[in-house]
Length: 352
Image (cartoon, rainbow, N blue to C red):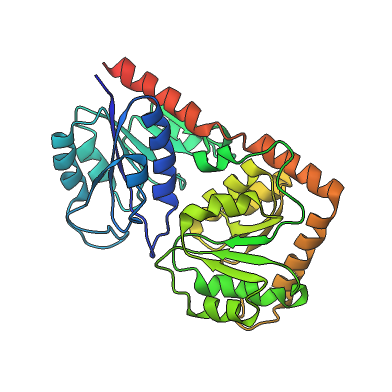
């Protein structure tokens, strides 16, 4: 009989698509192995699960907001899972409380979590922290039996892996900017304002369909021959594969850039990306700009302009660029989903 896995993750304008994307990556790998995959979530792009033949289950309460008073989502998910009958239930959501997990861990399924904060109790059987250099120490102290942490379990989309080339990406390709799937227009404009000294560069900006785009469209209209704006996330993999430079957020897309091998700048602006500057700095895999503290919104910010200029200089140095890409590839080999699926299959087999 086919094994069944049910994922619970949201995505959209408020929280971006990172949680949903990494669940989807693992789901694709399990489906390749014959599993039936269900996905419970809200605010997901229409094409998110249909192309992968996942079964989509809407949360009757809608999006779950962290820190808000909401019905017991653990109880709701338990009721749905009881009917759906998964062998494995995986939650990737900061809004699920210890009580929610406790409600779910008494079910007939193996319970897992995908987590990148390591700052809360997780009464689960397996936890995946796909952040490079993440330690399993916090999870082991909690007594979680199976801990899959660090770069060997970083989840890279199959679309990225299919485009990977041994020699890395072209040096003369456009600059691709993608800071995430949420409302990133203002922070993207802060980066674009620093391109005044590099006006001859081809620039492609990728945002989610729901992201406000008024300012970005105005920016493209100033020089339509060299600038483009895309709001279809499924195009990102192909755009990155031909990029000469990538500017991304400090999360999942950055590790995909490393899998491809691209001169890169990581822009950190979310708390769950707080360890990214240490990773990039210690492994010397690119440049990093920490924007968690406010930067002036006006054009001409010297600190941002300096980082952008440094990035272009680095990308133009063939020796430094080659060494940087080698370091990226040593950190992210792209096999994280395969390794995680192997361990999950062993877990479910041992439970039965």
